[in-house]
Length: 471
Ligand code: GBH
Image (cartoon, rainbow, N blue to C red; front, side, top):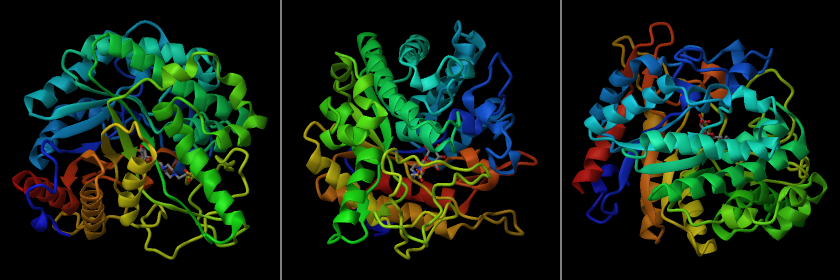
């Protein structure tokens, strides 16, 4: 399906077209305006932790170029811009509010509204103040209460203008990649701590939802990275069990507490040796399972899964740097990810647009209390080159976006309640442990001059949005 074939009714009325970034990945100004270290600033200084020793000091310099970046969004015709707030900028060291830090987001929101773009705010996209890591980080229950206080401060400053609030982005990454595999900050490889981190981020979500709800928030949600766990051989019980385990640790450990107020029984059983049950206190799950108004879905690739050793594993778990990676799959470290032989992005992730459709349809079938869905991230890294005329011809990325958008349309036709789609990412940016080596932007950033160039995929996305608005 191409955008020309969109007809009236393909996209529900008010469908939101957007693009996303995150504070640590684009802002730079890592030690300006009162901001102090986040765990990512510290992690990036660890030898071998980030590809090429790249750091977050300048990144895209979005902190200083924000008004011009908003004008780019306007040129693209975005309905909404999804960004995150840096906790370490707003409450450096998690002490008192830093007015200068909050002011940056206040100005951003004003610029967006002035440009007719809906601000879509995420409170936590992985950049915990280092001061809180030093008191235990997400392995410590108290961090959840600190998050609630920080969330309330941001809401007090921006709640009059920002309508859509997301507590966490991909708690999978900030718990299991940060504390178990250690390829993300804070780089710990402690399975028990990782399991506690999962629960404490859930708790933090629940506490913040409670606080923001009572302060009057109307659109509250969370963003999860979800995958289709497909057994390599559906007739092999070992592979089927591996897929169940992946589905447990990547999807259901997050979906079930949020949408059903309970951890799945198999997850609790698998994680018994890692103390999951021990960190759940009475009352936690009621808070965690409080109703939300939307679920953000980030999807990049499916996972073919096996329980048998596999020599030709795609190396998708290394994080890209030199540090020895642990496993994020706590208690299920034996699972492997064979290749399906599909084309891949520069991240080595297999491309299978239909996976997005099946994921969305499955969510609707399995969760009775499923709120409206938004695709809060989808996109791809490719090895872009700059043509002699200065343009970036990136047909692979244009095709990736077009095919995944078509997959969303099919899911909607099959009954999925999807209300928006955000491309990851607006700008090339700091791709975590891969540093600046991987480019996801629909807008190129030249890291020498910091100049922006709208890529062909950006132009194609703008045309797609225009066509969808007309349909
Ligand atoms: C998102 O993460 C992030 O929200 C965003 O900041 C980031 O820049 C973007 O995507 C592109 O990476 O192999 O063990 O990691 C997506 C992270 C990567 C999570 C693949 C699931 C598979 C499991 N996803 N990962 S593992």
